[in-house]
Length: 383
Ligand SMILES: CC(=O)SCCNC(=O)CCNC(=O)[C@H](O)C(C)(C)COP(=O)(O)OP(=O)(O)OC[C@H]1O[C@@H](n2cnc3c(N)ncnc32)[C@H](O)[C@@H]1OP(=O)(O)O
Ligand SMILES: O=C([O-])CC(=O)C(=O)O
Image (cartoon, rainbow, N blue to C red; front, side):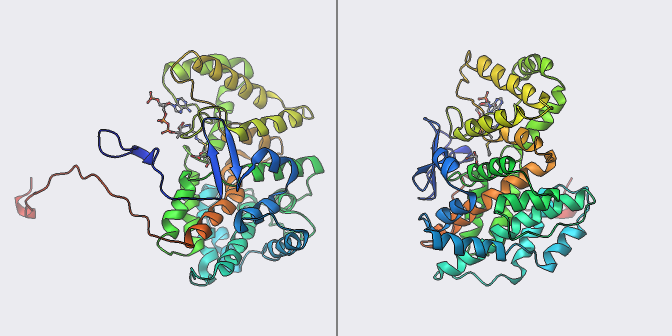
């Protein structure tokens, strides 16, 4: 809402449009996709079914889901031009930069936008959703100097992604955990990357270019990039016994603790709860427990310390636990944010398709605070 300055910094509280894709209920810590809670979807559904639900606005029957799965699988192979973009990127580049370029390149052969043909737009979206996972796995393997692994049509989206990333089929438990993580990251109403996608798509730009813009927005440490930063923080803390003092110092020096805070949630992010539950089960089966222990102490100390202050509305968000979970699956920290995009691409697409039914270009107003009448000074007279 606009304050006395006449605008709302960061568009806080501004209702920019209507959506039925998802709703964040910040006060009570609840998230629903098209009316169903993420907890129920995490328990009963699959990523593919949730993508269908998100794009089409209805749960698929068995025939519809089979057809959809077949279309997702048929679109997994990357076009040669996208492979070339990935191969040309320097290995030192962040995978989000390469992914943004790769997704833009997916649009080289994309048909022009046709607002009147929703089916056509959904098929374009399915192609990008499917190919984006292949691109993320391929970018990671290029960086690690490993040969690309071709998609396996026998496997689900989650299984196939882990297979293309690691070169071996995941076990059932890890594949299930990863599938749930994809469900949890799928959508989150008007977050920054979705808003970026919507702004670009509102100009009737192509889907690939709108999604490429969203990838740029997701990469930042205040948004999806926080999952990588949380693990950097855990590594910098070094050992669980350092964590409590580290938090005290962070709060005393007003440093931002990554994976904490949210524009909308005023309590625990419900996705963080589900992720933590899965992480606790997985960590019990692994030798390496230090990352989890360090984060657990950061988590508990933050909540304890913040509860004594007026900032007791700052709670863990989705990015706090996801990286620790992925690390236990031997995934490198630098790949965490691209993995967020593997899931969120379905949310971005659903928002664009919904918005195009009744599109109007985004064009907010600005409060001008510069001078009104400045004289142009010729170069020779400038100091
Ligand atoms: C998928 C996602 O995008 S989830 C969010 C991922 N991002 C992070 O985890 C990064 C850390 N968190 C943050 O930077 C912020 O909480 C954001 C960007 C998520 C939300 O930003 P905003 O809604 O603008 O919150 P805002 O910055 O107004 O915070 C209010 C106060 O809480 C403080 N605060 C907010 N988050 C944190 C944090 N993580 N650690 C310490 N203090 C914090 C701010 O410094 C500010 O203090 P001040 O009033 O003394 O200046
Ligand atoms: O909603 C937000 O501002 C950020 C977030 O949690 C998400 O995009 O998942």
